[in-house]
Length: 285
Length: 285
Picture 1 (tube, rainbow over the protein chains, first blue to last red):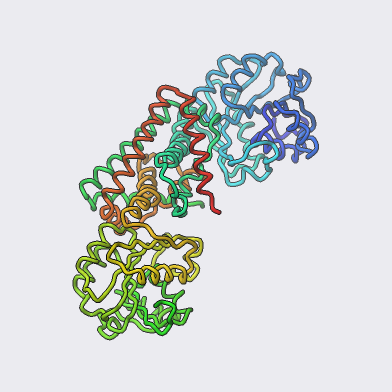
Picture 2: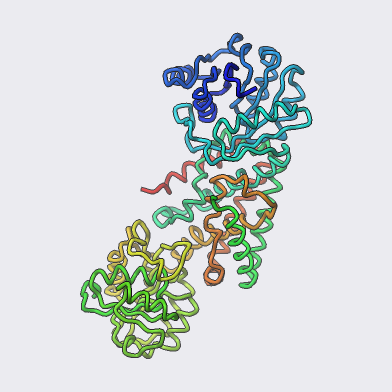
């Protein structure tokens, strides 16, 4: 479906991610519309030729004409939108999302959705410390991962279309995971790292530390500058998987502490060699 | 004393740091000698005009002629060297070091040292993931911190000379701390961050994670590639201060976990706002 540029694409939530989607897809020739809260985002996007048309209202014509609808909203806002407005969607429309948690969202949406509309979930693993359509970029997805999380309710056609969307957007890796696998992986690689960064940043309020800081501390706390509204919601929406990852981390950290208390140099060296070896896997290819 | 380039400087341990010291100081016109384990390091440094002369032996003439001796050795090797070889030092010589821990080293050396030789301790807070004189650079210290940790045994002249050395080497910030303040600060900013990185890197051995990793995880584990011999020794040498920092981190991390378990969104948001605010202090100026 997606390769047919006569189809109309609607983006709901025109921020950093939604805007970047719009920029890339507009370039391919698709008709792009947007629904978002701020008129200024619509005005900017039209002026910059990122979208063809947009509205801050639930414009029935725009919604009813869209063949593909991309939801770039906070998780609970996405669920509420579907609950309240799914009657406006075109019969046969495909919908997808950018939500960073899956298990708590995907099954809920698929359960309440009309049977003539299909929801195929995806997570574009890309972001920046800035927000808003003004900061969006058509280069944002180069080198990044796009993960589609199908369930047994999804058609193979929808899965293919969604993966094709990821490739069109410019993602370097397009793969599928189950919602559960996705949430474990994100819990570890992304959410746990944010928990660690904000803890490190707030566990010691001694003054003047910044005068002595080097790159190590800066690297570990880059993501400690965090959108509190979004991340608190993502943490809660992935509570079980994240708690499991936090417990794994605490156990290992306590192991290290025990070795240090006992001055078990050989044990610490073994852990460090394991760390060094495993880190090599994560080098940028 | 140091501004007088007729003085002779000896570097004991010609690796990454010692080599970088030699490169900068040679450029100023000082006579630079080196004592180190590998003949290949001496050969390389002479060929590259980083040092004037060097030896893999305890060359009595070289040691006896040095006005300033810079020890760039592992902590326990430094202590052993002084215990065994301090008789070879010139009367009136000033010695300094690059050791990353202070309380467990400085007083020990000052206690055993001859009364006609002065030890003023310093910590150049700079490093790279590579080692060896071949990787040394005369640009290594730009933007970095140089911390002098005097005790009541030090003369004000030695403190001034050591701070002047830091400025000559190109460090952007040259300051003093007590050995205890230094160790607390390094325990938090450097050692705790390494503990966190190696824990994160080894707490979850699930395969194929690297396929999905993004910049957050890469940033938090850059320093998980670690010299096990050096860091295990540094951890033990700063055990009390590091354990205190580890406990502060664990307490805060457990707070966050408790908030997540209780779905205390407001509490998590407050922590995130605190984190965001505090991180701004640590931006590169």
